[in-house]
Structures are given as C-alpha cells and as structure tokens.
Image (cartoon, rainbow, N blue to C red; front, side):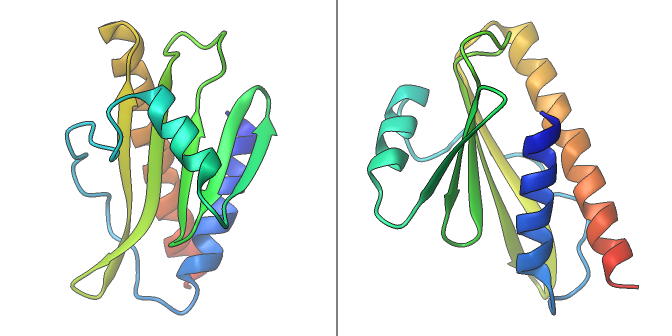
Length: 133
C-alpha cells in the first residue's frame, strides 16, 4: 500500500491547506460505505461522473470529490474483497480523516486491514500537523 499512502496523504494534505489543525481520527463508523457490497461500491464509483480511477500496485483507487478517496483491494490481497472510503472531514473547526471500510473477507483479514488503515490515519494526522508548523 505504499503508493496508495503517498497518493492519499498528498491529496488529503493538499485539501487541508488553510484549514484548522487535524485531530486524531474519529472512531470508525460501522462499515457503512453507502453501498450494499464492495462490488456495488466499485461499480457505482466507476460509473460516477467526475471521478478519477487509478490502478496502483493492483489496488483500484478512485478519487472522488470532497475530497474522498476510495481504495479497493486487489484480488490477491488477504482482505479481498474490501473497499475503504476515506475523507477529510471538518467538525467543530477541526479536521480529521474519516475512514469507513466494507470488508467481505475473513474476520482476521478484515481486522488486519482495519488496523492498517487506523495506523495510516494516525500517520496522516501527524503529517497534517507537521505541515501546519
């Protein structure tokens, strides 16, 4: 996921320029991404006007407006099929990364994926904080 991290961090940091300092991420919403399945999310996002679809290291990355970035696992990934919807959100004048995940793999693989995204969110918040100094 290194390329995804770089692209997502850059997009979210750029979007946060001029905003209030980022806080720790809010607790994850219960796997709600607005679609009933990962396949429906991928199909729906690919069909949405104005999005940019990229393939990076097997991952499908969709840059949506807002800024919102969707990441879909490649078939060989242990947590496949999974989708993560990540957005920079403002609440009470503070910015944070909101990550929602729909994982249709085994519980251990899904738990690991959630842990990986939580760690990535923490690093992104730290980078946002450093970029403001």
